Length: 92
Image 1 (cartoon, rainbow, N blue to C red):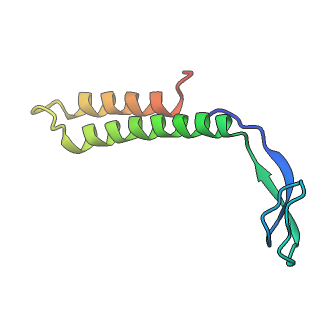
Image 2: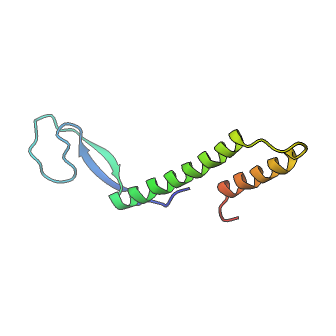
Image 3: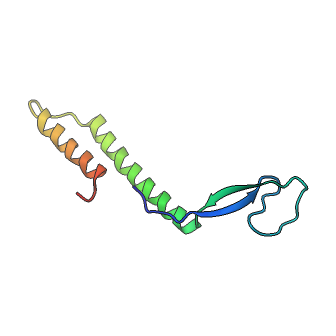
């Protein structure tokens, strides 16, 4: 799971795009609640998700392309299982 982000509740106009501050209106303003996050927090969360996806791709690649030696399937299976568990629970 990626880092937590700070959600900021704002009012956004679906007509002109104004967000909580004056902007020239095109005459069709209608405010709706919206949520935004600071760009730095979004970037950090996105980077964490991309790292996790890369780890999962590496595990999938190993699973797809590794062939156990004769009689070694159980050891290979257990090793892949341990890697998958580590990805699912990095703390432990």
